[in-house]
Image 1 (cartoon, rainbow, N blue to C red):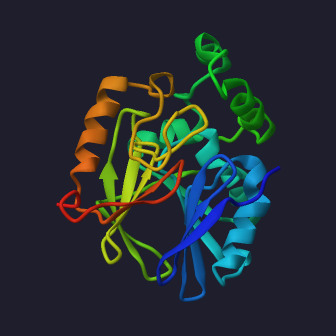
Image 2: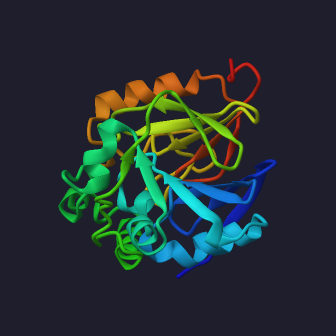
Length: 244
């Protein structure tokens, strides 16, 4: 398994992590750790490494906030919940995906029309090896209530609905650093995309509702953020006029 690609200290107590195939963000402070997303199941050692790189202790992980219930964002959340009592939380509309009552996720069959395109086979093999086909459902996941979420680390996040990629997918906005944690609503790179470093959407077969996903992406590009912390690809710093 490849290691962490890069880390960026966005602001005090906030570490953005670009993992082998997907990203997560570590919030730490006041003797506590919270995550937004969790990579793939096989990324658990890297998640713990990233917490230590942030200057915190993996044993202090309290909660994982999930942007959407795909395997590369749920990761080892179920294991952490069962073994360590970590709380896993998502928007009410996304709980069916997180709990695996439904599965709004790309399948191998969905990839077949693109199988001969550059990078598809390599990415598919890597995703399967990372646990992409595993049972990642978190039966005890809880709903995030309200539009503002106070973390145990002292940070505050605003919940930003971004349906389309999945029914209840959301982003999180951290107002002090003006950072938007966008999940897969908009990304800046992916092995199945040609360009990297620019805001864009994932290919259409990844979207549960492509039209709704496009509307969400357009809204996010106009949001009040200074930077985007995407679910795939590097951080994107926005020009002042683009941040509103």
